[in-house]
Image (cartoon, rainbow, N blue to C red):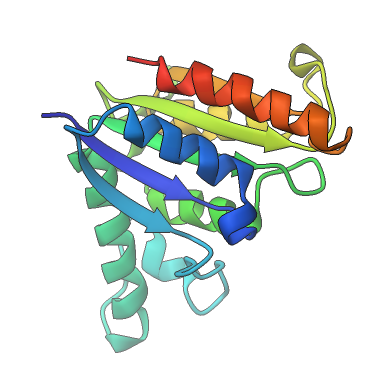
Length: 195
């Protein structure tokens, strides 16, 4: 039985297109063991001066950082326990939601999920795959590097070692209800067919 970690980052709740794509993927894989992390309902805190040391390689002793370190340990364990990470990625102002960036900030720990070597950084999360369920209002040429949401998400996954990434995009949500629904139907079909 495959183990799937689902990361939902949309603030749109029931109206979320990325959540709808995630649901279609899960419906096509009912045998999987699923762990869900809803970053809208339970956001990972943003990194601040009070928490930064707690998510570093060597966390300082003391109660001040214990809660931060415990959350980071939990989030990292969820990634290592999964065979597949499914990320819901709506695009906000051309980037990923800040809640998703916070999740990546906590998951990235030097010496645990990546390390620096003489040849450069090396991701330590080996043998995992990812599916990105991406939703956006406009239509874009991702090869140009703009907008940043998808490229940034893929780069962060690759940095920790997850390089086998499939992406399904529902775009043109702002082009009217008919165009949006057609785009969603197409993306739902695509994501449900990913093995």
